[in-house]
Length: 114
Length: 117
Image (tube, rainbow over all chains, first blue to last red; front, side, top):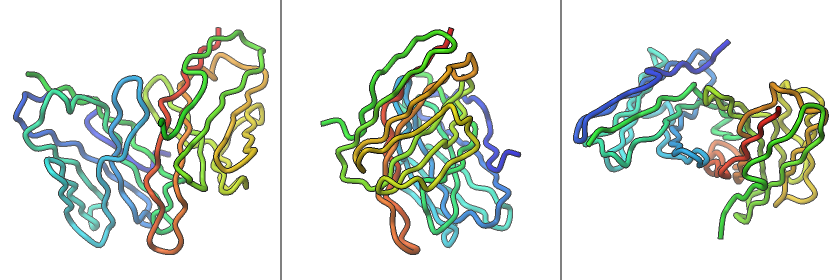
């Protein structure tokens, strides 16, 4: 049973374009939704996170949109750059944001073409 | 000044062997974790220790045994290695928050790629 479903599996975007990655969850007890970015040979690193009391959070070129009723959230990367090429993971957790029990999506490999 | 460091980076071994992976964090965090990333990049938590006490133990074969000598170290020992154990193992740490404030973000090491032949 996959609790966090992520799509697409891979994504190719031209430089300057918008990258959009979607996630859907099942457990309504989830109350913390982070996105992690992973470069080859490195561990994942927190990119941006949101709690369900807001519908959108923006940090620079990265925006999370959250739809509580639909149990969906998405990552938007504006003005995508080749340096953004990486694997992106959405995740979710319960217990007031305890990150130790993060449930990860299966990841999206993003390639930004120059 | 690496925050979460794991050794070794690569580990190639034969089936049936016993091996260990070491992890150390210098962030002053009180909670450490082991995650497994399979060949399809799927990340799944295996164990979590808070102040040397086991708090998360997912369904993992008991051939895997974590050991935390102090809150800055969490080692993973694997007995009788099997082909299916081949994966990248990530150590991570965080500071466990109290109440609704939540924890600090997970800081991952760069992984140990284990190949069992």
